[in-house]
Amino acid sequence: MGWWEKAYPWIGAALVAAAAGKFLPASVIPDDLKDVFSGLLNVSAIAVGFLATAKSILISMEGRRVIQQLRRSGFYNIAVGYMITAIRASFIVAVLALVGLVVRPKAHGLGAWFLLLCVGLSAFAGLASYRVIDVLTEVLRVPERRE
Image (cartoon, rainbow, N blue to C red; front, side, top):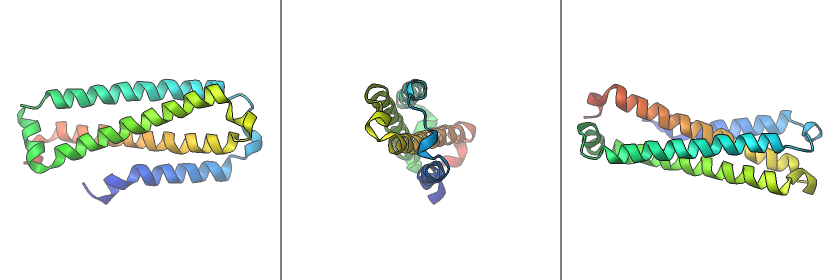
């Protein structure tokens, strides 16, 4: 695990937000983003549920050999930290989507900024979730390397 694994959700989110800010003019944002926010809310809520379940499963495996190896290597706390970050990011995106559904930011002159915030945070949540999947796949694939 190097600096890239820690940083790529942040870097990716910044690049996606910058690209959206540069190439998505406010004039093309529709007045009603209800469907966008509804979909974003659904995906984010599913991600929170999935990641929380994965975290619970990991915690329930406490006595298993692979978990003991992860703890000895110091990797267990890192993996759990990545999960918590992804859960929090997905939850924040779900809350923003709910606010977008209720408040209708474009009607208050905040459409472009609010959408840019949602795009950036969605990219971060997606990349943070991918990082969790990537790390857990690596753990399950070769547990002997973590000794």
